[in-house]
Image: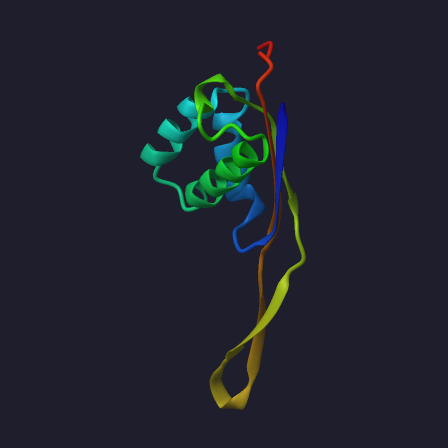
Amino acid sequence: MEGICKAKFVRCSPIKIAQVLKIIRKKSVAEVFNILNHLNKSSSDIIKKAVKSALSNAKGLKSPDKYFVKTCFVTKGPYYKRIMPRAFGRAATFTRKTAHLTVVVSDEKIKK
């Protein structure tokens, strides 16, 4: 059984998410939850929520030990354009990054 979760328009940089995805790729879901609970990264909560949703879509919440993270990747989302007030009544524009996160869990054994 396979479960997929697509989290779109996540308010976090894709680079920060990719650093954590590199750590959890091709590991068991129980090990992934253990890693994400002890990892001091801002994106670990977002990824934990996505892995839990993918596990729920695979109907494996009761036995997460036999599921593995098959694939996980992140792509860039659109930028939010914002304005910051500056001196003399001027305005400076800056952007907020977003990301699209995809996590696939499966109960098939993954070859490393």
